[in-house]
Length: 153
Image (cartoon, rainbow, N blue to C red):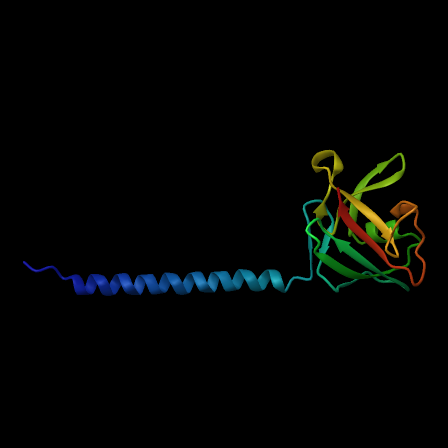
């Protein structure tokens, strides 16, 4: 008796090709859905914005730069009618934290959490490139000023 290996090999080859194509389509489909997203909600309740996004509505506009612990920068253009940076960013879901003795203790910025109590990292707040002398929730928005958050240890 002879074995018919030719048809078995052909079926295996076709099955392998179908699986390869299916994996390629699945991978491409997943990649496209995340790249086209401009904002998503993080686990912390903050909204994750993509670099260069204009966020909010209002007559006051200011730039916000966010630098994570790996040095990756995300720059946002914030539009608001709020008086302080903290009010604007909290309302838009860009920052989240806890109220403490000294005001808002920011733990999450743009979906990235830095909690000194758990990992030794914290969010430092800067105005015009210098360490802020006031908390984010008491810093008045000033036309022409730039604001930033950086993860520091």
